[in-house]
Length: 285
Length: 290
Ligand code: SF4
Ligand code: SF4
Image (cartoon, rainbow over all chains, first blue to last red; front, side, top):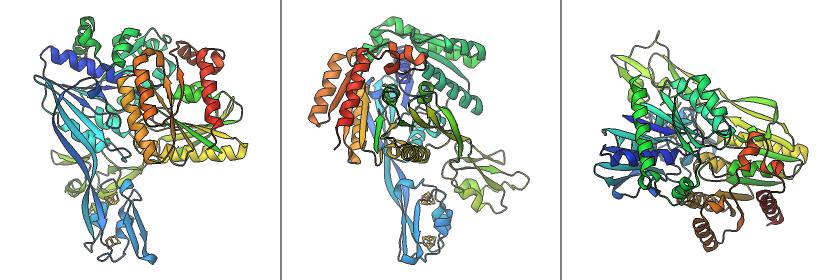
């Protein structure tokens, strides 16, 4: 079973829910893998210390144009749909802008003069960390400033393909990185907070998941803050409220120290196990 | 003109709260919400959108099955694992397609059309203290930083027209392309963080990014009183790298209360401790003309 934990924007408690859920499940002896897919700002490992089993580099292939072989026909320039090739035939200048290249391979197909070769460029790493029998944490991490975290995220998820329980800590937003993550999930847990910002982002996430046809439910974090609009909206839309986490200074304190409430307070590990049960039930429906 | 970008690495640290406060401190402001993937600032500032424009973010491939012979050549060429052959039928996954157009070029019967992704929008209009530009990226579209540039450019144009001194940029989360687009060429970078182990970690990453562009950043510690120990550690680290700490904001439930009334904390409780501190921060930022 693959569960993605997501929220329209960061800071609503997505990392909090995924790390605690993972901790509670693996403590119960369920073989679990947590994949940190927030590759631009991964920090699950701040909460779950593990022993690094291995680190893999993720590379992208970048075309390199040999201007000795190039006939300056411009076919590659026409084929590139990302404006990643600077082509100035008058000056006999041609070059690939690495930051814009999406590694699509179109220019290589276009070139009939054999002027294009490929080199590798590191765009991120995947760290596999041993947490406890038999659970692991997989962390996707992009190099700073790369055009898209999607290739790194996809690779990281592949790394975790045969576990009983896989939890994906999804990247914020609703653009490509989010889709690439939830696309692989059986169920999506959306974390929100009862504020206008929370509700606004929740609506966007829900629209997106409806569009791609993924089942989902909602966890309200920092309950007690804000107002009841989120609850009214959930009721109106008949969306399952899976769990509520109260606004509580103890939780905030534990979190800020990089610790897990499910580890320190059994009431919360029970709560997170119930969340897992609720998701299972939802999936059977 | 002075462009000030507010960033936080991870969302939820109070970046938008701070941007909203700055935006309501003076008249004749221009605000650019560059968090196009989860725009929230408009909820507080409530601009009257006078302009609504379509933003095309690349393309997506679609198969015309009346022409397709299911030869699979397109699938062999796709680098994004977006095309698969299931039971002899070639299928394109919309969620995986990157829009590179290669399949449509190699298809021997011309069965693949490239459709523009034209569901994203950007908006501009007046709010109570000036002008605001914001955008909404459609679900699943690439946040390449181009839309961020569109928002910023229009904000600049508005600032010129209205003789505004300052543009406030509410930056996107993360450390990728959109963030790079939001900070290239700006004068001042404010990094908002909160005193937690993970917040500290994110701060270091975003600082590294700003440094790589030779930008001078300064730090605001939000909710500093939630973990004084961690706040101190962050300040020590800032000292080590000579990063000015502009201010420390206490945790205050009134921020959310204000938000419920579409008001920044400056408007909601102008004399609160946090509002005073934000005003001080604003003065420090503007006093530094280097
Ligand atoms: S691989 Fe694709 S994106 Fe990169 S330069 Fe070639 S055509 Fe352009
Ligand atoms: S397609 Fe090949 S020969 Fe033509 S301009 Fe590009 S690199 Fe040069």
